[in-house]
Length: 447
Image (cartoon, rainbow, N blue to C red; front, top):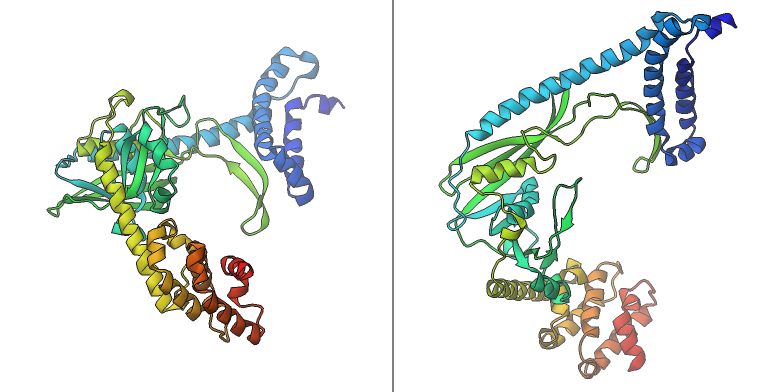
């Protein structure tokens, strides 16, 4: 007992940490502990044990003569914090070296960009810069390459709040990939407020000026043991000149240890995964910046000669220009929908879906002109085949279009629809898509 009385009480934290970690390895118990945040406070208990040992040992040695303890106990927290501080210092030294190198490189880059003469087009991961440049740096419009969008590009620009509300409630706009988004001013982790005068408008829109192309090249690697995600923003001018800006994020160890000990459910595997280690300060910007987020886009803006714009200095695109561009986008999307429908009618195996022809569904005049072709397509897709799923998507989509025709127009094709169902009934194949086409079934019941 006398020997135990000389053992610091703080040492009890370490077997408790071991027990808690062991309990978390048992899935039934671990799930409960995981919900209670055990991986975090188990690590916090380890730190408390080390700090307690560092404080209790000298107090017990020099202040409590009855239960004096050996100063050798100080070796445990000294080794723990000393080792940790050494690896944290190594990480921060590597980060500072990389930061100095990138700052010098970026400061020497000046891009001859003029938004009155050029169109800024983003590729790859650089697409995330569109909103920041138009909202905070006065860029009139930014473009992103999108292969699956009509015209091949998606533009981003500022819009007055009044027009934002009109567009948000218009289903035709949404169907033509025209969307508006609110945005906040301020740092992501600071005091933020919703911008009250403007919103961001994205829509299919092709640049008409010479293109300045920005392509982001991403690479995950380690620099002197420091995990980093490097970003190279390559800016290609219309004359072929290329400029390179460097950035990215690092994940150094913080100066004070943050151990995490525990287990969590990996739903992707699925498996019960256990881990032990120290958390890192992920997403630490490599380039010098006063803000934690958006450092790379600020470097890009400076190189492009764009100045930071205060919220009350923002200027939206004119309403007339926006209206003209939106109407053009809707027109081109409708034309594309019609082409897709005609191709699917000619070949029902193309698997046409309702999601790819949303504008056409909301265009009654165009639907009416396509009525004969729609019925012809339903007849082709409704053939009894050995594989009943071959034409299912196209057939069900054409059936939806048929259901949107005026009832008097539908009635002119009642014999064609009934004949089609008669053939399927004779084949006695309940898997046929005609038995899943709600619009046709409802019409057949009402006829």
